[in-house]
Amino acid sequence: MRRYVIAGNWKMNFTPSEATAFINEVKPLVEGKNNCDIIFCAPFVTIGAAMEAAKGSNIKIGAQNVHFEEKGAFTGEISAKMLKEIGVEYVIIGHSERRQYFGETDHTVNLRTKAALAAGLKVLLCLGEVKEERLAGITNEVVAMQTKLDLAGISAEELKNVIIAYEPVWAIGTGLTATPEQADETCGAIRDVVASLYGREAAEGLIIQYGGSMNEKNASELLSKANVDGGLIGGASLVAEKFNAIVDAAQ
Ligand code: PGA
Picture 1 (cartoon, rainbow, N blue to C red):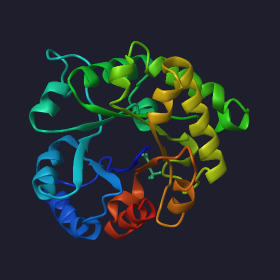
Picture 2: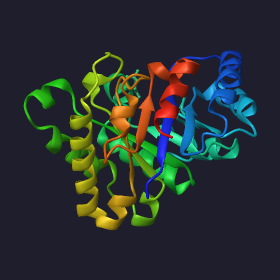
Picture 3: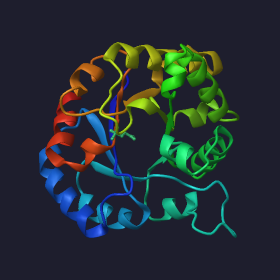
Picture 4: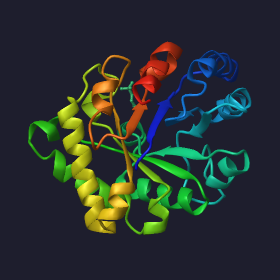
C-alpha cells in the first residue's frame, strides 16, 4: 500500500535561525505521527540548520532544486552530489514557480530529475496545468505530456525514487484549491499515464501528492481520495499548527 507523504515547500522563506526555531516548534507536534513521511524542503543555505534541528525526529529535510551537471561553470547552481554529501534525501524538481519565473522547461526538468536520481536522491516532481488549460478542458492532455517528457529515459527501478506532485498552477498560492474530485481525477489520470509507461503495478506503487492551497481545513477531504497520496504544501507549511493539522489528516 502507498504511504502518505506530507511535504512542506518553504520556497524563499526562513533563514537558518528561523528554520531552527520553526523545526523546534513543529517537532513535538508531529512526534510519533508515523503514518506518513514528513519532509520540509528548505532554501539551500537553510538546509544545514534545519537538518541539525530535525536530528533524531521523524522530520526529513529536502532541497527545492538541483542542477543537472555534475560540476563546472554554472554560476549560482547546486549539484546533486553537493546535496547528497550534506545528507539531503529529497529534492523538489519542476515546481511551477521555477517553470514560470526561471525558464524551466520539461526538458530541463527531465535533465534535473535524471541527475538527481543518478546521484541517489529522491525526487518530488511537480507538474500541473495552468488555468486556461483547465478551462479549455485539456488538463489530462497537459499532465500526460508533462509526465511523459519529465520521466523520459527514467527506468522503472529509478521510478521507485520518484514522487509526483500534481499542482494545478491556478491553485498555487491563490487560496483556490482543486476540489477533491478534481484532484482525484487528475492524479488518477497521471497514474494511468505512468501505467502506460511502466505497467500497472509500478503505477499503483507511485506516490502522487496534491499541491495548491492545501491547508488545515481542506486536507482531510483531499487526502481521503484514492489517488491522492499526500500533499506538497507551501503557505501552510510555514505555520506549525497548520502543518501539524495536515499531518493529522494523514494519520
Ligand atoms: P501553496 O503552495 O500551498 O502555498 O499553494 C504549494 C506549492 O507551491 O507547492
